[in-house]
Structure formats: structure tokens, C-alpha cells
Image (cartoon, rainbow, N blue to C red; front, side, top):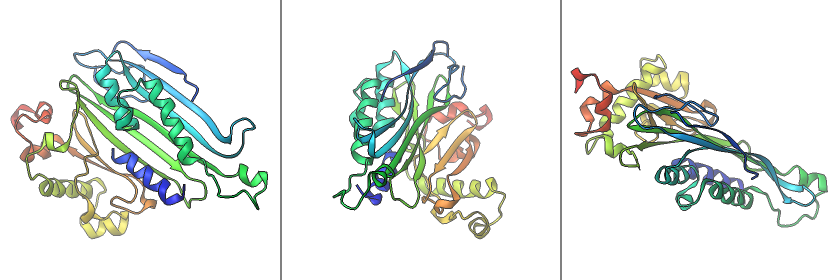
Length: 290
């Protein structure tokens, strides 16, 4: 596997193992959390949580623990006792083909795939010393955390960081999934906004990008922050909470790698003009705006 393929896999994973368990949460009010969270609450519906945590290195030669290797660090938070939610969490953390597996099976299978993709296998070991082969190291770190949960929605972030041996630099980014707790389905922009929303939402995002960074013009934002305002558009990668939406843009989406991840917050009130009738977001608006 070459660097370009590794980079492509990382980007695709973002658009879309000895097992140990952390304490679960059996009493869950709205709030935020992470993979080690023990106090995730909802207004009406109780959620219990468990985690699988992996911290290990996998070798091309597992018997001797020598040669090319990949370091894997996974912290997977998932809901207990709700098969529909578990299937959703498996799906948006690992991929569609993992949805029907148990969390333990999903993690174990995912690690096998990581080994196949990230352990570098040279066409020939001729010319390499054992020490050279030991230095052929890749890594993958994957974790999810709960940004917000209430009786309506669970907003989850998946963070993925990868490095393939020999690459100039690694890749990282976040993929957000919002679960409608009533329908047990993933919320998309199309569920929230009227048809043809993209142009208006792009303008809103661009306006709030300027205000977020304290810049007055697109040119100033590009020159001072390295963010290409004309590239800012809806990407279905946003968190939901009681205050608004936060859009996430990963490296290379709207700025060079060196700029890092860009986040743009939009208050619910700014979206009133493009909300679909009966949009879930109406529940978070002051009565005067509904």
C-alpha cells in the first residue's frame, strides 16, 4: 500500500485488539462527553454507555514482534442495550459493512483491516537490515466522543488520525454524525433545510467564518488565516446542540494542511430562513423566532 492510497482511505473514512471496558453510565440530562465519559444524560430517555479501548502495536511478524508494524489506538464509545443505536454507531464509526456486528466484533474486524492496509510490505526485503524493517512504522488513532445529547438528538464526533510509513506527514480529521433519537436515523442537511438551501447556507457559513475569526473581508480572511472563503460550503459535517450548529472542515477542504481543522459556529436563529417545515431545529429556537 502506498501513501496516496493511505491518504485516500483516511479521507474516505472521514466523509462517512485486546478488549477492555471502561465503566458504563447507567443514569444519563443533556451534556457533552468523550470516550471516557461517565455522565451522559438525556432529558427524557436514559442512555447507558460502554467503551472498548485498544492500545497495541501489530507486526508483520507477530511471533517475533519485528519488522514493519502499525500502532493502533482506538477508543470506541457506544450505547448499551439499544441494538438500533449500536448498529448506527458501528456504521458511522467503522463503515456500513460493520453495522450488524457487535461492538466487539466490529473493533476486532476493523483492526484486521487496519493491519492489512497499514503494515508496509516491501516487494523485497533485499537491501534492508532487520533494523531498517523495524523502522517501517505506521499508526492509526480512532476515537469517538459525544458532543451533545438530549431527548431529540445525539451528536457524535469521530476523530481519525493516520500516518503511513514514509509519508511526508500524517492525515487527521473529524466526521460528525447526528442521530435523531425518535426515528433512530442519521440526520442530514436535507432533513433540516428547505430544498435548494445550499446557496443560502453557503452565504451564512461564509459570513460567520468572517465573524468567527474577526475579519472584515474575504481577502483578509484568506491572507491572515489561510482560509479560502469561496470554498466554504455546506458539507454535512456539523454538530448540533442547544445553541446552534458547528461545521467542521478538515485539512485541505477549505485551507492548506498547515491551517489545520476549521470550525464555524452558526446560531440557530441565523438559520430560520432556510429551515424545512417541522425541522428538528425549531425545537431549539426561542418562541419569538418560530
